[in-house]
Image (cartoon, rainbow, N blue to C red; front, side):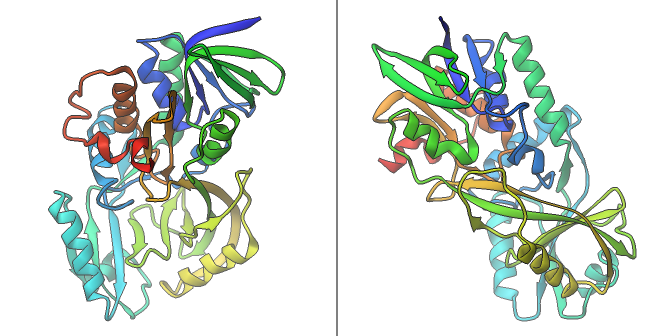
Length: 365
């Protein structure tokens, strides 16, 4: 027996859950998740911040559009951001300021005195920086749960332990098979599978786009002095680390991007050591203990922009993938925009001003 739907979405992380919530009121939808519960992989391993400067100028419009939506629903908390630089990196600072000031992001250059006030124990080689007052923390679990609840209320059927193993398209309809031999039918198949985006496309007989999973390492440290809750999100102008406080501890990443097969990612000891070494070149704090370490996979298309739209060779296959590490901070605008593309709906206050052509799958053909 086949359960039939208008749309089947593969992947119930933040991408699939948010899109399901957006299209659920307009169509019958099944949301297929390979794991026991949604959000086990990248969504559940996020560093949980919203920063307009994170991801570059072409990601910024999606982040900026999502910000008011997230704030109105209580998913953002105060943090502030600070990008720091060593002596001799004026050109990098000028480029950073120019890119984002032109986009309307509030970014301000600050001197060594301001850095010392924001980051106690900062080593002397860090002499300048850029503040981003609008940077926020994100309640990732709350946001993901909100989208799942909204999808459920709209009639979306969530099926866990439903790894896609087969997808055949004939007569204008997909027949999908999962690992437990269950079958589902749909008119549209949406690939929101994150690190598994290209393998899902291959199962469906669709040409993969070259979406590559890259491993990102995070560690939770107990430090002396203890990480102050007033510490901003601190990034390096060259993109070699970031850290932020979390419950009296420090969350630290070496900002690594290590190619990986799609998998349940785990941190490598070398990457943890690199992260700590980089932190020790920033501040004179004592590392008392590595309390926790984890890794997630950030998936990028070849041009490092997300992919939203029908596959030109099979328009019944819809890409919603390649969101890099920005899928949570851009989720509201991205999901709304993708739903509008899929269902041919008009732009609204959330997506007006966004250029869907930047993100369409057709750019790779």
